[in-house]
Length: 162
Ligand code: PNS
Image (tube, rainbow, N blue to C red; front, side, top):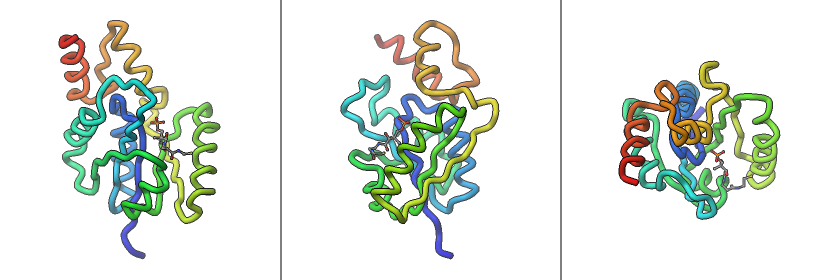
């Protein structure tokens, strides 16, 4: 069988250790893993897409199969552009299922040849989300052990710049 490319899409605002865990697991399954950062004009992000791309690039430096890209528009079109046969998504709690299944079914309708692969992060990250990291940090508690040290430093730098 030929090499398998997968896309791991998300907002990554900011990237967490849960994301990194999933990326590392994905590298064991796929020959090439494209981390796709959605350029979503509707949301007001904490970090710009460029900052997120840069942080992800640094975090994934030791993982040669990984490429970091941005995308906008439909995920299935991005997957087709990069030659991906699979979409990787993390599933944490049961509450993730409804949203993830809706997306996976819609993506299957749009691109029947594209498979969605769900993986569980390490148990330690099963409650972790970018949204909670942002909230905890903004309300004054440390996020050590939840995000890579580089992301933590960027969070502090951004707070000081404000
Ligand atoms: O990390 P997130 O915010 O849960 O990621 C959501 C993401 C980026 C995977 C999803 O919003 C997405 O794929 N958006 C692209 C637009 C699209 O394809 N929409 C239809 C999918 S059902």
